[in-house]
Length: 359
Image (cartoon, rainbow, N blue to C red; front, top):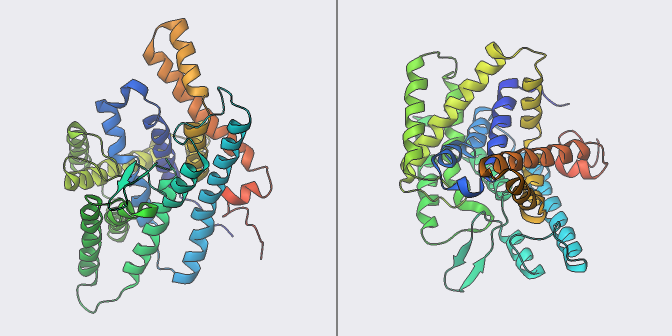
């Protein structure tokens, strides 16, 4: 039986997945302060919320459940990518066409290596094409397993301090290794993400979200705004002028979004609010939305045609990008709604609710 969902967490995830889509759909506005604001928080917050919800788990059972909830959706999305690539090969057309890869070999290597940014591997002189947005599933899988191992350790004295030190070492290791090589399955990002998992755990353990001190939100907002002035934080490739500030900014900005989500749940939106229900849906189904947003990004070419069409009739790039964002959100949402009615396929993407084998 599924546990009762926490509405403000789904709202926060819903806000985050919306900005994941927007962040990938800014076109010429990608190099902007607005994009920087989005990238500071839109990935870290998923790790922080997971850390907030963390409870000690049996390692073997957790590995199995994580495989079905994270790796199976990854595999399903890769299979869909191969099918769409095959359609393109058999019938070249302007709608179904790959944005990144040009061969089955490239797609296979990209899927097996599983990183979110292009990389040249040292010593062997090979270039890896990124798999795209679903790098997050692999990083989350590796990251949650590692965090569960760290938190299952037991120390007689200063237990939490020692675990915090281990987490910090993992994060530093991820940043250090990244300067030399992109490890497969986005391991570098998974190592850095230990800090975000731990931050979420600390928020829950010490009830820090209960505090209503406005100064905390003000300071966190200032840190978020200042971090965004420095550049765009790529968690997939650990790129930022100052990675330590990126971590602090990621935590601060996520805290602001989380507190805003709690405010939406408790004070601003009624229980019957359509906005609340929509955000909760987006948050609850964010994994499926992630996957089909990638399909749209990398294999469906409606967005660029739509942008060009709106530009021709309006001559407004801002309007074109706005329409393009609405399309991309609708695409992922409509597919996600449809998946819930398709047996087997829904087990790939919504395994918590629709298991392959019911016990």
